[in-house]
Amino acid sequence: MLYNHGEYRVFHVDNANMNATAVSHPNIAFIKYWGNRDNALRIPMNGSISMNLDGLTTRTTVSFQPSLPFDELIINGHEVMGAGLKRVSEILDLIREKAQINARAEAVTENNFPSGAGIASSASAFAALALAGSAAAGLNLGERELSRLARRGSGSASRSIPGGFVEWQAGASDEESFAFSIAPPNHWELVDLVAIVSAAHKKTGSTEGHAIAPTSPLQTARVLDAPRRLEKCRQAILAKDFNAFAAIVELDSDMMHAVMMTSTPALQYWKPASLAVMEAVRMWRADGLPACYTMDAGANVHVLTLESEAQGIEKKLREIDGVQNILVARPGGAAKIV
Image (tube, rainbow, N blue to C red; front, top):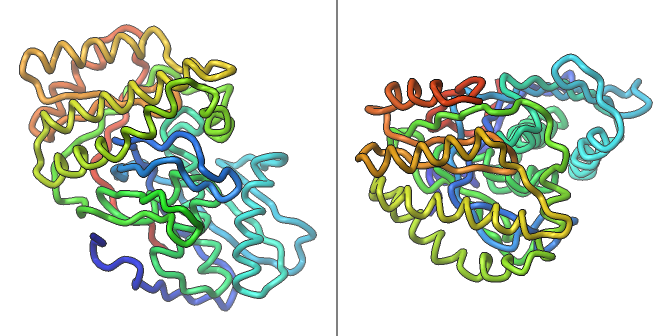
């Protein structure tokens, strides 16, 4: 179902100066996206479910300027060239085509959390870019169209457009592959305690990882089982059943990392501290605490718990050797113009 009928929502922006600013949140996937049916369109092999992370924010301003000879990208105060700028220009090209404009653009973006460290910075980045860029160009895109546009920059960005708990249906075409909310942010008082064990930019990005996923002998089985995991996770969220939720979320995370480790070349994102956090979480749950872990493509561990237990579990996490910091996030809203 679509929460708030998002695909019909229209953003009204004064674009007289052809600029707009958007904010969006990264998301943590409970059922993971790994591997594409179509790499160019970023149509995934399987659907996925996630939660937007309030408190972690990307803020992006896009300004179309006829005087610019080429697109410019500034991230956290530093100009970015090369592959990063190319990916941004490709999204801006799609926007220019829709808006029938030719002007180059400056995109200025800031994150209040580590980039490229497995906290879905590309998801919030391309969600904010899609929204700010389309608004600056004078387009009034609904949620479904924005989700599809953001997906072209980063698959998981499609899930950072809607708010709360979000499902991305894989689809078999560009038109069919988009995300929608299955529950609003206030549906369930989950807390994501992100244990930072490495703030370094990962050596192999998700785009490269998706491309080699088919080389793993485990990927076919993971994809075939995805509909079952999606249904279990969806029902656990809607029923607010933490035990069922924990079991399927940890299974899905472990399955994705098993594919990574058995790909060619092999991808190993875990650090010793990552394993220490995962083992601690398993012990805490065995002792009756509502806690489970999940990891995206990076070394940092997302520890999910209930609001009532968050403070105590955060304290326990800070005592684990190798944990450098804890980021705290709760269910976040949709991408929006500010």
